[in-house]
Image (tube, helix red, strand yellow):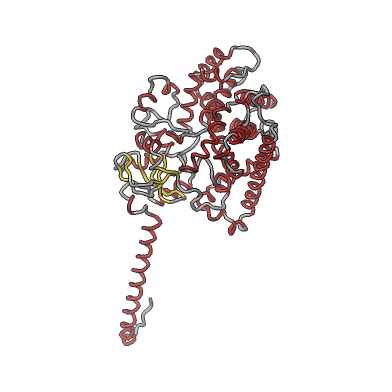
Length: 497
């Protein structure tokens, strides 16, 4: 501030200057108070869970921006200050959540579903692509009596459906696509995604995406655009931007919403068509000679509830469940298969051992052999390879959020009622205090009496499909699919993995 050199004017300015200082001081105090309140409310965890080790908000945002949120062990951040090892707080899009990664803590969450209930569906995400696709009433997100209805409808279908012949035929289609490229390098990640999409389309509601042989197929591209939209971090962490009032600012996002509406409409049409066929008696397969295990899940669900319509699901509820089956079964199995191929390529000795097991079980005939369900279950070493792959490169990073229905404790730490809790599976599978050399690929961890069996005494140590009563309903489906694909690939020694 410039002050006149005339002393008389300076003396006149003193009272005014004091008032300005007072106003500035008050303003600064108010601004500081508001900043503190904003920091306390938005950047710090709620006071009743602040006793747990937690991320500094700027550190977490930095982690998100450099796209390491899914690939960095949270425990490394807390090694020096973890008063409760295996627990930490981080800001998720639904609010601050307790992330649990100790075997005993994860076991507590899985084994007490009445205390750790599923978080209310669609918190802050109504109208988004994410919510439109997997929201609604379904087996993943429901609780209580609603969950019981969904599980009752889905269980018989999954118990009866195990289409290993379909898995074999579709894997053979993948081989044909590789052969067509005549020795050129193959993008196996892309090819695995296309293969598993075709398998799911046929297995879930008998729809042929024809993606393996034709990646530009219309419906395959529609589905791919939906998955790309769901994986965009900007809209995941700012879901309000993905709602109608904002979509005019994002033409590509608006187009993705239109593609999703088209996809959901197709599924709805398939449900109506199946119901009509079953009502006419054209879809009952009991006397047709067709193996029920090869029947699609939609048909089996509708047939099952037709025999007991007391707990039948609406068409919208069935559609929501089919979307969950896709969401939980496509990229998860695709990534597991692709990472298995990657691990076999890096470890030629392990690859050769897996090949010998496949040949011993399926024979060494030059033509492709489709494993039966019984064959697949005998592939013990390949099963160890699958488990180790899913430990290192798990199909999901953490479980769907749950919320405590009452005050409780996890590993001795007090967790108040209405706290969001999730099992952090990535940290569980990579914590060096749990696993020896967790970043090394060692399938023998899972042999009988091996490291995995010893750790299991502490609690849940391997949980790519969750655990407890709410373990993923499609676990056996995914494991059988992987066993068939891997064993058939390993037998083909004409390929260099």
